[in-house]
Length: 418
Image 1 (cartoon, rainbow, N blue to C red):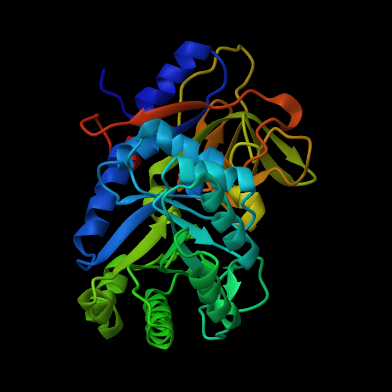
Image 2: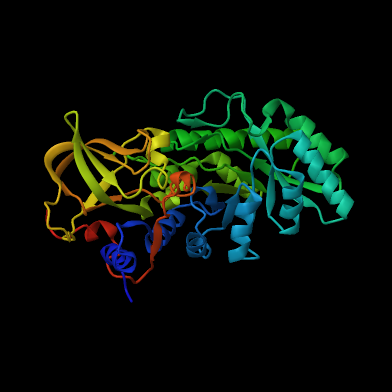
């Protein structure tokens, strides 16, 4: 039976006869966006999905025929991908890989291991030699000393960091592979991931050129064959209505990049491992208003749900964008609480004042029983949240597929008027 967001909300209500609380993922929207992104990418560039943004198996399945592969940061994530496909390429990252994880990553035939330290490199060499397995393919993750990187809320390189090998130790790492790792480890290239949630496409392209120029220098200095430069992700998404990352501009600049062309001429590929840009706009968190009240002159709308399901607004300190789906569900004889033409704090059901989704929202009309649908909830939402704090039930999960009615979710925010 074809579905829409509105139909999904109605179905949840019928099934549970409880206040609505659900995630809705527009799988068709994700696929359409990724197809559009791929169309503008230069020929020697490949797009991976970083599943830390949202590891839902249905999303992995939807992206499987489109992306080059998946980037994972734990064995748990790796196994989620392998449950969907035994062959798809996997990039295995993370700064604290345990020996057991490295062994399992090699057993599950990951395409490349992102090496974060010299100790990790020695561990990989020892594992492969002991097991007498084929060479492990590695990319050295480098923390550049450059201070020219764009500034974002999340900076992961260009200074003291637990991530990657300092640029000054590149030569030591290469020699370690040549001397101790001969026959056990194959150096296939380099990995960079210096920041996250960058909004400036032009500066991002300049940063990629910086990466490629560094790699060219190491190639010449150490007589290396570089098959892969993984430039990481870091493409940003905004939640305040301001412009987000301009993918079209970014890929146009990549097309023009002489450093990228030189990499391609030598048979090298440029990888990107994007997470939030692929899925953020195509996830929705719907939570029903269970109470409305005035306290010391301010209005509060309390939800069945909150930051234990969608932690992003609390962790990033922003007001999360939303729409209201109006409903006529009200079974009581007493008056239905409502607020009209006022500012309202939208808060969750937790026993903490930090459980706030939006402060001072301008509300034309809102009633108990209406549903607030938080947009841009496809990335770093459910899986980063403290689901079991206070033991509230988890939300339902619904999926919109290609061919479903009203896949344009914004068009479904039309129900009974307030």
